[in-house]
Image (tube, rainbow, N blue to C red; front, side):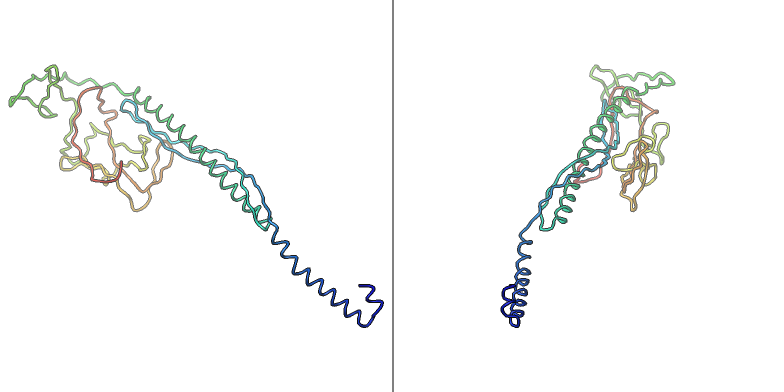
Length: 273
């Protein structure tokens, strides 16, 4: 380039300019192809924590125990991403790693809460079975009915007297035909979530819409409310769209052993539960 300038000053200048412009043009065209061919692969590692709340129930000797446990766990995961932009590859890798870490933490928290809730529910069911109150003695001795058969069969509050396999008669110790218009509080207690600590995704409430006595029947209704309702079970706040009615003889009557008869009608449904 310098030799051309010394020999031909007038024309050389023009040629030099042309050569330089041509060189710059070639550089501009070639550079993008080299950058486009380059790709960056980035590996990122992230940690995260997640919390899970699990409710479990267990039954022992006819007594139910329920427990709700909340657990928090930590998860660590790695992820890889490739892009023509190092910044983008780094961002994507970090995002993927964080999502995987959260999934790992959530799985661990759920497993831990489920195991603890199942164990506690079982313990509470066993404790409830052991703590069942002894039946209160009758104010006066219950007369022993004379076993009879056929049309001369005797009857009591439970209906026609039934005989045991040894020929002796069963004695009626508890009966309720719900022939009034209100629940007999001497025999039953309304079971609410606040009092029992129980909930199966609903709130047990003492409301006429969920519990009523009419036409010789006790009506217990589970309703889907228009707005969410809130109740407390075992110190935990429960928010749900469903309310239910429930009753218990706890503290009123306890059956140690014997025969139970009940007439009940369930709503027709194709759903389990």
